[in-house]
Amino acid sequence: MKRTLTLILTVLMLCTLLFGCGQKSGDGDPQDTNTEPALADGVYTADFSTDSSMFHVNEACKGKGTLTVENGQMTIHISLPSKSILNLFCGTAEDAQKDGAALLQPTTDTVTYSDGLSEEVNGFDIPVPALDEEFNVAIIGTKGKWYDHKVSVTNPALKEDDAAAPAETLADGTYTIAVTLEGGSGKASIQSPCTLTVADGKMTATIVWSSSHYDYMLVDGERCDVLSTENGSTFEIPVAALDTPLAVVGDTTAMSTPHEIDYTLTFDASSAEVNR
Image (cartoon, rainbow, N blue to C red; front, side, top):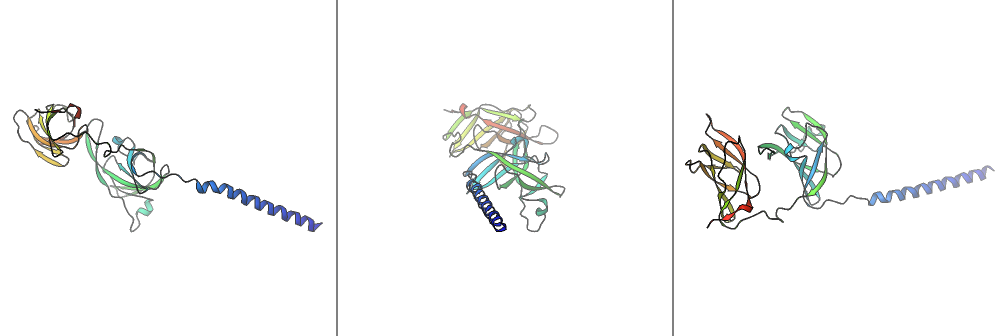
């Protein structure tokens, strides 16, 4: 009787083991094959979220960064609110302080706010291990202390390819074109339409200010000195693109000391007419 009972129990145990292994194998198969499709190479906009109001993208960027995918590797570029964050580290604050830690270095980004004012801030290129998943990023600011944060990148949307959809261009020649000015106190204005010269594909605009107190302008890092102060201040400045706000600086001597003032100029491509 004992032998029979032992035999029955042994058979039941074997059946249980075999059934359990079969179930485990069946449940494991879908997990092995359910891999998330990789994001195609390209440039995307994506949401960049953090766990703190002290570390976030600049308000002008509306919570988004530029996600670049190259050979399957993802990197997101973000612009911060200021230059107070000096370095980032992909990992924890503890690891960031170890010898040989690869710190992310800042770029200098120019952001333009809804009121037309522009500002230079720090930006960073952050490697992204995966979408829709939190990962560790440590930051250090001007106080010299590292802080841990969790960030995530979500909702990638393919950017329009500027190369595939060329910006508005004009053939070589001389044109009149409408130009709008934003920024400053609102007291100054510029003549519109203005003269736009295109030579070898490069555009140069003749800008005439309502005030004769401007002595130079800064455009894309290039200083343009005043050509004439008769009937206003006249400049020739490079124009990188039409229908796109162009950040410029005008230095005015109207006050007791010279002041550089930020403006934006936008040239309306649809208004361009050939000078005859």
